[in-house]
Length: 157
Image 1 (cartoon, rainbow, N blue to C red):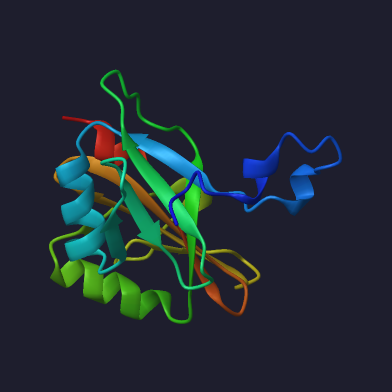
Image 2: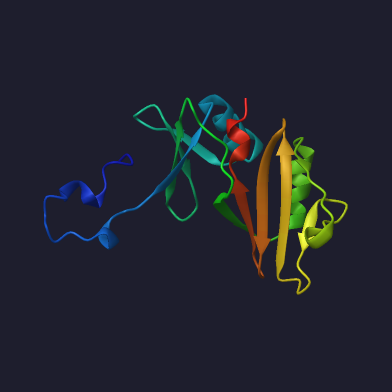
């Protein structure tokens, strides 16, 4: 089944509700092969070819994220993808070992020497990283950590 074989395929039924659909999200990239390499190899995620020539990011809960090329793609200025993790320090170490460089900030979002911000309450942790000049955001929060990616990186040539 691909992204467009959804519950809404019978949209001619006037009573269909969007809440009954199998909604999905997606984002554009400037280079599908770079996206495949980054998400599949660097991050170790399940990336599959889509029958339409696009990529699908398969996540643990059974949902899929569509990754599609866009010739005039512009960097996102917001977070669009979140990954729960249980140990941000471990994730930072693993990504650092793969060549991912984490940002260090001062001021209100002061990070530690590894690039991890911890809120004053300790309930939120965030790490920002760059790889090949492309910026990604990792957001960690609560008892579990959440990696949230700002997708600006995959579009900058």
